[in-house]
Length: 308
Length: 275
Image (cartoon, rainbow over the protein chains, first blue to last red):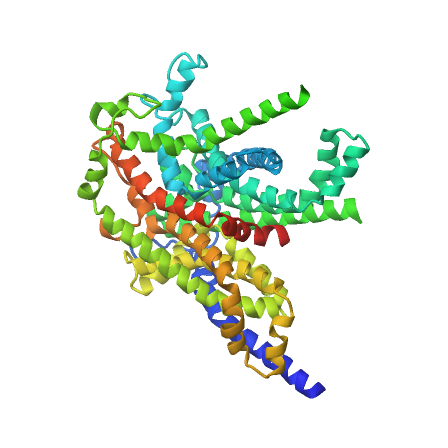
């Protein structure tokens, strides 16, 4: 009997690997191998015209010093601008999304007529393709004929039309606004799911003890939904750090909003420089990997420190 | 008195939120029914109903072909992902073996991958396979984000099914393959619908790969086609056409999402909240 159980377990393990093999093979072809090749290309001077012919150039796509001048992605002023833009975009948009998302989740967690309809409405921005959102908002934010300028002027908030997508500061604000509009619903739904798992008697006990609702929120609710929020933050942060489509469609490749991904694709595809572009791509990968590791460590330390 | 005030505040917050969420789509619909100089007058309520934008988008570009491309690519990607991930999810969710945790985290890692990081490597693979400017390149490359997602979500669903489900089958000596296809597949139906729909939306919306790996108008998917609608100059964009195209590709998605909303939300939050 024991031998039979052992053999069943061994057979299941064999079957498990067999079941995993096709999926793993596909991931090697579309993820692992291309990633390794990208890193490899970043050490060469390959071009898009003929990716088969190249010389090995070491780390000079990243950084090189020649004749009194610095070269390479890491010293490229435009890359540094795109790094700053990406960080500003990620930090501001994700912070806003978390604060707004939790507020909306608290609102939707209360029982009131029309709650179901509001929750359904939340899915609308999320369901609209990003490119479509970018174009819808691009039209609304149009400096001459846009409805946003018209509405703000009617309300007396601005005196004359504002160039939302041309002004450097405003274009970053506009892109963040659209990202917040599009992804806050996702954060709110995650937060709502977490809120609904908080046992009701916790609130009941706090109410009986006469504790102020704000205090209840910060000392009871927030710690309880913390782990779910941490997951939402990391999903959103990674998404924001690799931002491409929204920025590319709304503002193109201008310096004011260029992100790391937009920069890498421009070098690689528009300028056909596979070596330089691959170096920029590889940096996106390592920056995101590093931030993820730091964030996971910070959250784990924090949770361990407070709870155990 | 206090309760009335809170109630009013709540109602105002809800209305402001609803307007913020829905206005862009409403305004796109409004614009899509305008033509000529009407387009450049801001209106907040429907004034005239003109279908000419809806007629022109089919004539001025291969928009029907673009929609067909998107549907074809997204459908194939979803079917492939579900097929590959069903057995994988069984292995990861129901069998204890060494390296399981490591594999799960690797797969999660791939799903968080910046797409741009594989761009040049994928370009080479796609050229080597002769798939450049071919929809096959998109089916292949989209697996990088749909597959980890479907594997991850189906694994969490699979793991939560009670142990008794397969106990009898194991005792009866049924092979793992029979257990997956006969016992788990029917049970996983709802989860697979939700996961498949989410993967479909992700594939339908994808822009970076579609922009990079296709070249001709006939091979483009909907997001690229809509992003590249241009006029004679930057100041003469055909906004009526753009909004009509946007409305056409958005309404079916919204309908699907609203029909399946409960399951979708469950699928979206499954990986995150429990993980």
